Length: 139
Image (cartoon, rainbow, N blue to C red; front, side, top):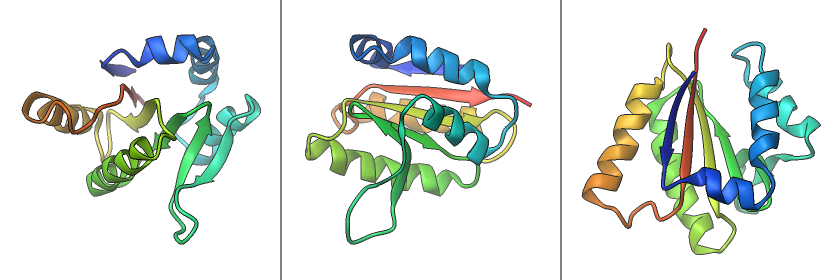
């Protein structure tokens, strides 16, 4: 499993009592299956399919105590859309940290998401003003 920690989200998760819970969820993942991973969060009392805006169908895969979870196994463009939506939620005070889950072997690959996050932080350090925990699941 690849892991990138940006702006120490583990501190935010620990303060909220969610770090050990996240570790349990990650250990419970037995396959790269979006619904099964989402169910692991639901089993720990996370809201799933948390609507982002009332006038859209956009939703976070899981949400608890101002921590957003996005599970993305399809397109790098979806990751970029998520960054925009995360900025909106941060602006509205609904977001303290992000857990972003992808894979190391299919789009959007962990290393591409990692690269894009690092480019944003290096060139525009204030553009993503919240901590991100990027997790790359392996086959």
